[in-house]
Image (cartoon, rainbow, N blue to C red; front, top):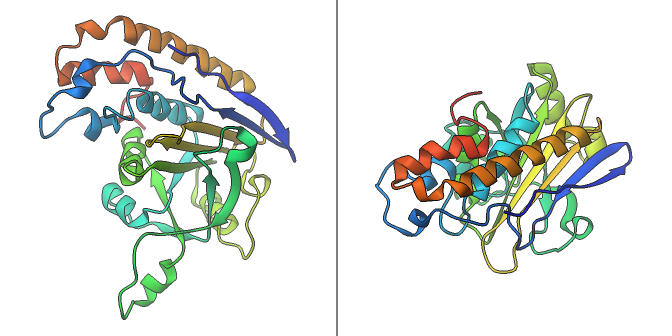
Length: 272
């Protein structure tokens, strides 16, 4: 087990916390069943976006993101693959002009962080696009997250690439605050995190590297200083990962593995 440690920095009134594990991912002992045959339904991948490349650390990331945003309304931009996200999440996205970018090949927090960039989508336009399709063209899609399972669905839309990125905006509950978020992400110029964040709002970027020389990272930003909360969750995950690694030999089947995941992640997939 490699402890989860966040580097802290404050810029323009925004507190930022970066977790960059490099090759030292948090979970170091893995379930051997990740390299064996699985049933067609109810697999580590369908349930938790865990496979034999992006392993149990993904479940830890899902839990970390969800617990850091407790009590807030959560929205996500699954970078680039908006049409796949629409299919997995079974939602029509709110189109926005800007999305966040992290360079998964860069080694440091400073060089990875590219800030807000123009929204992109992999969905090609038809020869005669509708007005709605034209409105979505060249824009990112913002989706509502109601449960941790929705976050896993957003990961399913993107995680197959060399690196994948999902950005979560957690804001005060209510349609008025959601509209201010959409407006902040739809202006004529790229916003700053200071402009997007309000009050108790929390921003999280989860980047997962799949190919060689691409690396995972978790970035947390807020106006409030979340140092105590971030450190507390990091310590809690150290305990959870240690307990999980000690009981690996007890997991004889995929159902056993799936029963162990909520305890490792600290969340139940279907509980808001």
